Length: 99
Ligand code: FES
Image (cartoon, rainbow, N blue to C red; front, top):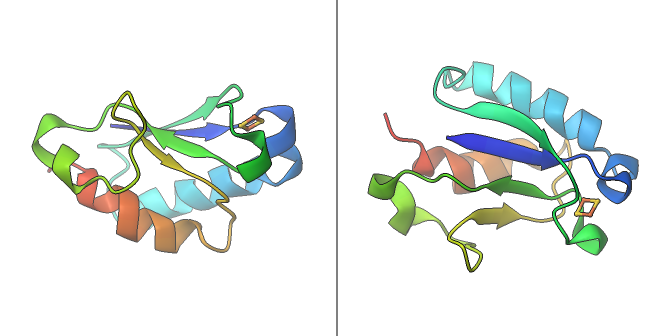
């Protein structure tokens, strides 16, 4: 599964770099580094609500647990910061990981 953090100019200014660093630590902490690939993404089209984080390859088996899906079935999280990243990860992303 992937986690894409927007590094477009607007999200960059709102702290994408910090979000990426924080998510890196979180993946380590939850011991899922081998299951989740952290990626930087171009603008995700929701600049006013940045930092935006998207997961667009949710496994079939866990897809029903995704709370905020887009038309194409991706999980899209808005207003992610280094301070709320762990809470959002634990609540929204972790349950989607296929073990
Ligand atoms: S810059 Fe991140 S959504 Fe546009």
